[in-house]
Length: 349
Ligand code: NAD
Ligand code: UDP
Image 1 (tube, rainbow, N blue to C red):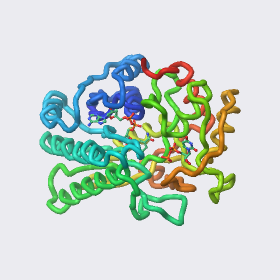
Image 2: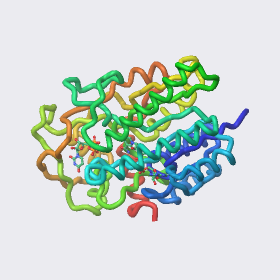
Image 3: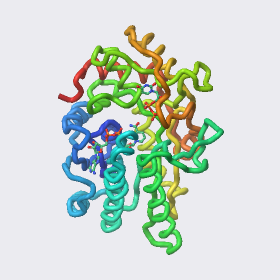
Image 4: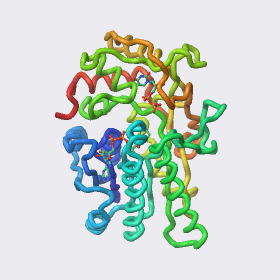
């Protein structure tokens, strides 16, 4: 069997480390580039521990063209999974230039280095935040885009750049055209079942699941439920939570799809990765308490600015074209998140 080398940018991060694990288990060779700005190299040691296989790690910034050129000349990369980026919505409103520089410029440098090395298969971490506000709560890929914060706009700009890149190859009918999957994630939560890798947020978490886990373990005093007056079944916000392992399995399926007929002449195509069902904040708390036996101390607080009442994925396209579907339910997500939290109360230290 031919071993294919995949370059994973941001591979030391939350989703990237799970992707490395899944890739190694699917017999790919994994090369990681990460500047460790929001992660620790320990995550990659844990990936090696889980899989019993090595990860080739380069500590570098994707904006460093020379570093990328060196990596492409040293490793025979066939495909890139691009996770590297900044991801906090609130921070992006305070530091927009940092977000555009890191996410948009970083991706430009990456695709230039890829083009120079004639590596033109890319799986990109996009986000449901690229969608605009809609009267429909279940999003399909052809919904109009209209992100409302700099983070979301950085993802939408990257999508535009990648679509243009692919279109240019189609017009000029080049021999090795760009093949790009834009994967729009909904709300990834949970952790690898081993409890060795998981989400390790810096400081106080912004996202619901790590916040709930840290309240349950006693690191944080109380969860604020942002709003109970939304027009939803219990008044709290509804999102589409997806187990991180299901999410990264979608990436492995995407790599396979890039080799298939749909992408033969080159293409850039978006896919929603979500479970296709919504779950409220109170349902998350109830599930957490039932599955872990731990009480979650919470209070109802005002709505968070910029939050939608409800959104969830229509994942039909990924199911049909990537031959992918979620396998894990909310109980699995919660119990794996808790397993990781219990085993690593201080994260990767
Ligand atoms: P993360 O912060 O855990 O991982 C990102 C990794 O990229 C980190 O290891 C960080 O050190 C690295 N990185 C950042 N900038 C870099 C740069 N310039 N050069 C090299 N490395 C760099 O985040 P995550 O949750 O694993 O998210 C991965 C990707 O998925 C991101 O692009 C994010 O925007 C996207 N995404 C995440 C979510 C989510 O809820 N976690 C949802 C939608 C999309
Ligand atoms: N949420 C909450 N308290 C928190 C964090 C989040 O009530 O401390 C709610 C938030 O309003 C939303 C849902 O939980 O309805 C998911 O929020 P998260 O930040 O995890 O993801 P988002 O969908 O906003 O990216």
